Each structure stands twice: as structure tokens, then as C-alpha cells.
Length: 611
Image (tube, rainbow, N blue to C red):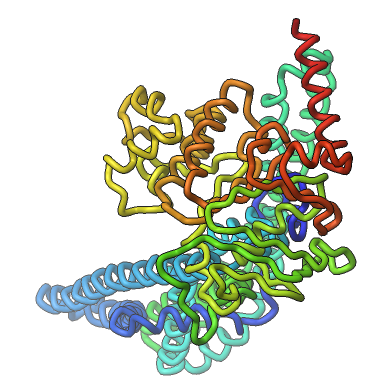
């Protein structure tokens, strides 16, 4: 791309991924429920298994009551004992099978729902214009697609299941406790808040400190990576002691935070043990008095204590999962924003078809345009230009003249506020944007490659291309030689961003990709400005072949590369100030002549210096 700013500046992003902040309400979770409800069979099985596990959990202490009263009584016999434990084993087997089913289907739903949400978000993002990603940081969006969906996976696959299971278990347990011993149950119900509230308070403090502790650990990692990555600079400026002292401060801060976390956890552990076991002791004391008075049986007390522990644990877990549900609601809200984002550029209700065969005529008629984020400054002002089929038009001018804006409007990433742009006589606003872009091939300033093999990178604009077409395009782009030398030929993985290739090789693959596109209009955005002299010669030769028989718009800062253009259009402040051939514009003594004199004098001076 040119150095001209296009659209809003990206939002700043931190080095670490932003954490999903808890929402204030659970309302955004409706989006997750809508996605989950698409699988009623799996939801039904999971709920049935969850209900079964909760019922079986309550049935275990109920069975213990029978065992204590019958199997441990003075008149018990081996047959009675065996029968009592057989039923208990059956309950345990049912609990195990139902737990396995619940885990499988709940986990399945978590993975499936997250996969669907990721796909829906990505599909919507692909419909949004580049302007959206100029105003919204791609790193922050990537975080939503990873960290936020991980939170939702936990909510669907774990938190909701735990919440429902504990809610059903708690309600069922209290009901059973009232059936066993109403007086003791009333004491337990009154005592549960006295246990849960301190635990909840400590839990919140512990979560906050734990988050801070994690941030401190992340600081250590970031500091380590930064210093080791710049080791040459550190040692060249003799800053080893400074960095050692700075790292020591970070380590000590991390240790201080960890000490607070350890202290809170230690106090919390003591309080929990005191409250839980103290409460159980008091209940057993009261129960023992009831047994001594003959009011209840020993089995009833055993079942009561067992069930009471289950109920207390269930309601204690509910206080924990509520925070997770709020975090899930926050994550769902952030993802929902991406799902609900609508593209400003869309196909009309009844799109008009472009004429066949394609001619490649592009016309700008009295076009005025201001970027939405810079309304105070016109990128184009009453701009009129017609590029005839097969013509090569070079666009030159200083930075900020509006050159790159032409490309963005031609590919309909934006619509002008005034005027009209036509492709083969049809207004762009009347056509599906995909059809417009299908008739154009772009070669950017830096060849953008994907983490894939050479074949897939080459045919990115035409997936139907076979190997014969690929090699023909590679020859046209001066890329066949180095592609043949790759270890696995076209199947060679090129690395992230084409890291295994040089800049010139990446650019020639981008040109070959444009050849395979077979589009009637070619857009060249400073395609050689970042290359050395040898690579520039090879790329320029490839571009000369590619431009033949195509309508071509060339943005160039190096005027030497556009001297052979059919027409040179000189822009300044969004307007055309000159146009003609190189020799005509040079003799005219205008802006082009000044730019040319400056560049060619610099090159002559550099060449003399080399000699």
C-alpha cells in the first residue's frame, strides 16, 4: 500500500490478550442459548442425564439410612446386609453411567456451540469492508475469537451443567432433609448463609488477587521476551545491570502479590474448615441428642449429615458459578457485537449484471469522497477520470494526494458521497461488490502470502487452476525458477506470511496469482517500491507481461517504472492537476516535472557515488 493513510487508525492493543470482563446481567447469554437450542436431541439427553445424576446423588444418603438402620442393627443377617448394599451399588452404577453421559453430551454441546459461534463470527467478519478493520484492532478481534469463545465453551460445557446440577441437587436435598428431620433441616437452612457468605467474600478477594498475580507473571514473560529479543542492543549499550535490576523489581512485585494470594487462601482455608466442620459438629451434636431421646434413628442422622454436606456443597458451588456465568455473559456480549456488525457496502436487493464479455473500462465521474473518520478533509474532490479498455494509466503524486483512495473506491470498499463510478458502463452501486472485485486483480506493495503451500498461495484468486496453468503463470511472473528449486515444489509450505521466501519472491508469487485471476482490470499499488534493484527488474519484467491486453492502473512513487505508461495522471489534494505522457509532462514544468527532477537527480547522484 502507499504511505497515504486510508481510513481510521487501528485501535491500540495491548501486548496481552484482553480478558473477558464480567457482564452486569446474564441477558447476553440468550445468544448462547439460541445456538445451543439448535441441538434439541443432545440438550434433552444432557438434561435427562443431569436429572438422573442429581437424583442418584440424593439417593445415596437415603440408601445409607436404610443400611445403617437395617444392616448395622442387632437383628441384621447376611442376606439383609447383601440386599442393602446391592441397592447402593446399583445407585452408584447409575450415577457413574449418567455422569459419563452428562459429561459427553454437555462437552459435545460446548465444543459444537463454540464452533458454530466462531464460524458465524468469521463469516460475518469476511463480509465487512477493510474500513472496519482499520477502526477496530484485528488483535482485539482475534482475542474475541479465542479467549472469549474459550469462556463460552467453559460456560456451555461446564458452568451451566454444574449450576443446574447443583441447583437440582440442592433443592432435592433440602426437600429430603425436611422429610428426614424438619427441626435439624431448619437449623441447616439458617446456617448455610452463615457458611456461604464468608466463603463468597474470601473467594472474590482471592479471584482479584489471583488475577493480579497472573498479570505479574505475564509481566515477567513479557519482560523476558523483550530483553532477550533485543540482546544485541542491551549488550551494545552495556545495560546488563540496568536490565537485571529492572527484572529483579518485576520478580519482587510478583512475589509480593503471590504472598497476598497465599495469605488470603490460608485464612480462607481456616475459615472454611472452622465453619463447615464446626457446623457439621453442631448438627451431629444436636442429632446425637435426638437419637438419645429416641426421636430419630442412627440411620436418619447418618443420612442427614451426608445429605447436609451435599446440600451445602451444592449451594456453595452455585455462588462460584454465578461469577463464571457473568464472565460468559460478558464474552457473549463482545462476540454478539461482531455478529451484529453490518457491512456498509452490500449488494443491492436486485443487483444489475455486468456486460459480457468484460471490456475493462473504468470511469470516475465527478467523484467526491471523504473518509468517515476524516470528514473534515476531502480525499477526492470532483474527480473525473476515464480509463479505456486495455489502457495503462499511471497515478502519481505526493503522499495524501488520493491515489490509494482510487483503488479502494474502484473495488467498492467505500462508496463516494458524490459522483458515480462505472465499470463497463454500469454504476458500481448497482452491482454485487463480489462481481465488481471478480473483474479486478490486485498486486499490492508487499506480496501477501498465507501460511500454506506454494500451490494454494498461487491459486488463491482462482481455485480451479490446475498445475499446468500455475506453471504458466509462474513463468509469466519470473517465478518458475525458484519455485522449481523448492524442496517439495508447489507442495512446499512457505511459512507464515511467506517467511521462507525473499521479498522479491513473494512479490512474484503475488504477480503470478494476479495472472491466474484472469481479470480484465489490473491494479498495481507500488508493486516494486520495496524491492532491491535486481528484484525490481525481475518483477517489472513480469508486470510488463501481465499488463498486456489488460486495463491497468498503476500507483507509483518511483517514476522510472511508469515512463512507458499510455497516460500519466498527476494528483494533488484529491484532484487531477496534470495528465499526459512522460515527455510531455516533463516539458510542461509542473508538479510531475519537479517530482521527476528530484528522483532522477537523486538516482544520478547515488550512481555517481557508487562509482
